Each structure stands twice: as structure tokens, then as C-alpha cells.
Length: 303
Ligand SMILES: C[C@](O)(CO)[C@H](O)COP(=O)(O)OP(=O)(O)OC[C@H]1O[C@@H](n2ccc(N)nc2=O)[C@H](O)[C@@H]1O
Ligand SMILES: Nc1ncnc2c1ncn2[C@@H]1O[C@H](COP(=O)(O)OP(=O)(O)OP(=O)(O)O)[C@@H](O)[C@H]1O
Image 1 (cartoon, rainbow, N blue to C red):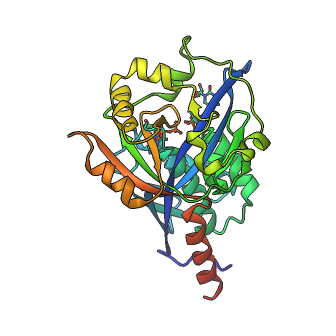
Image 2: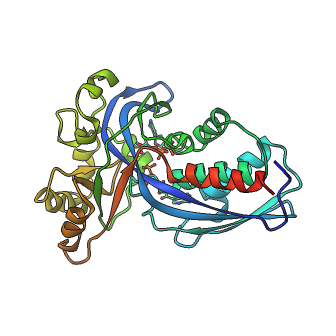
């Protein structure tokens, strides 16, 4: 590949995820939790545009995220890859169209970070392989590696041991209660149950992964505690339950239900109570980011 042309631009998606099931098995000595979860990627998310600049700086325009720019996971991911590649000559301008709710359990910040690692690796021609990028992602957060690898997956360990899985296409209605759940606070709550029995991927595969949420293995160990602390979440799930089995994703606040078609999901979305936000998205095995990266790689190789 050539060196980037000045002002070369790359636009990439940062898709959301749902945790179709989530079990907490125990707490490690370092405070992190062993868990098992199925990550379903969605064809819906934020959009990041990266522009190569001559200077050494990373400039971020990310409206709608209420953290200082230097704490934004996009900025932290950019600094991490810059440092790893010892890149002192190239900079970037990154502008973000944010549609995923922060603190919603759909992994918006983590996905933005992963897309930044993938995007700058391509734009700056760093040449890092996916295992290295996934390890950089792990340093930024437990949910980042699955977005770097870009495949729906069964996750174990603290969330970083990933086995790709194929989940038949489905549509999901995701409801966004008007509250922000702190992941760290929930993991440290003494009332959290941490003693679920481990299951095997073989057992999950014997069930049909695409209808996991209807299965005995479905459910999310955070749900009782989150609904206790945030009545908005309980109300949202109770409403959605009238239209299908509804579950919490991650540590919330979002709850979701699966549908056979987009039309069916949109119909329920249209009937939501006033003031409740939501969106409909298709579940995908492979992240849309990978399609976009392949197109970019093909275009720079033919330059
Ligand atoms: C709940 C999930 O969203 C499920 O996908 C993830 O496990 C959370 O992933 P995340 O938001 O990327 O979490 P991180 O940013 O790595 O960690 C936030 C805080 O959650 C706690 N944490 C996180 C993951 C984990 N397996 N055990 C933990 O105890 C830690 O106290 C950590 O300080
Ligand atoms: N680019 C970003 N987008 C959203 N939040 C960010 C970003 N950078 C940092 N943050 C911080 O990270 C917190 C969690 O963001 P995120 O959107 O990943 O939550 P989440 O969907 O609950 O994630 P998870 O499911 O991984 O727990 C936010 O409350 C915010 O303070």
C-alpha cells in the first residue's frame, strides 16, 4: 500500500451489539468478572469519518458524548495505535455521527474505539494484524475486542475469549429507557449474583442460536439488579414483554426483543409509549465495518 494522500478520507460504521444471553460465573482476584455471553452484532450504529492530516495531532469532533475529549474512547484508541506504531508524522481528524445511546449496553463507546483502531490502522498504513488490534482493544475495554474481530461471537473469560458464531438473520427492536447505567457500579454492587453455572458452546449450538432468547439459556444476570435500581428499565421491559420475550442487553439500560421481520418490529416500535425511544436493526454475523474496510483496501491498492 502507498503512503496516505494528504486529506485522504475513510468513513466507517461502528455497529451496536446485543448480549443475547449473559451469565456471570464469578469474580477474579483482580476484581474483573468471569462471564459467558453471546454477542450479536447489529447492522446499525455510529459513523466515523477519518481524514489523514500532516500534523502529529488527533482532532476529534464527537458531539453528543458528555466526556472530556481526552477521555473519549475514540481519542484514547487513536493515541494507543499512534504510540504502538511509533507514528510521529501523521495525524487525523475524526468526526463522529453518534446515534447509539451512551451507557445503553449496546457497546457504542467500545465499538467507536474498535472502529478507530481498524480505521487508523488502514489510513496510516500501520500494518497491524487483527490479533494485535484486538489486544489493543482489550486494553481499552472488555467489549472492544469483539468489535475489532467483527464477528458475532460466544464470549468467555472477562469477555475477550471469543468464538465466532453464526446466528440466523433476525430483526431486533431495541428500546432505550431514559437513564444511564454505569457498568463499573453494577459490577461492584454486592447484590449482584455471581454464581451462574458455566455452559458449553456445544450445548448452545444444540439449541438454535437464532432463537436463543426463547431458550432456557436465555436471560441476563444483571437484569434483576438493574430493574431494582432503575424502574425505567423495568417499565420498558414490561411494556416490550407484551409483544415478545424481552431482555436486558449488557448492563442496560436498553432492552430488546427479537422478531421474524423488520415490518413486525417496526409495528411494535410505532406503538411504544410516548417518550420512550427505540430503534429497529437487523442482526448480522459480520460487522459492516469489514465490508467498508475491504472496499478501502481495494481502492488504495489500485491507486
Ligand atoms: C457487561 C458487558 O457490556 C457485556 O458485554 C461487558 O462485560 C462490559 O464491558 P465494558 O463496558 O467494555 O467494560 P470495561 O470498560 O472493560 O470495564 C468497566 C468496569 O466493569 C467491570 N468489569 C467489566 C468487565 C468484566 N468482565 N468484569 C468486570 O468486573 C470492571 O470493574 C471495570 O472497571
Ligand atoms: N465515543 C464514546 N461514545 C460513548 N461513550 C463514550 C465514548 N467514549 C467514552 N465514553 C464513555 O463510556 C461510557 C460507556 O459508553 P458505552 O456507550 O460504550 O456504554 P454501554 O453501551 O453501556 O457499553 P457496554 O455495553 O460496553 O457496557 C459512557 O457513559 C461515556 O462516559
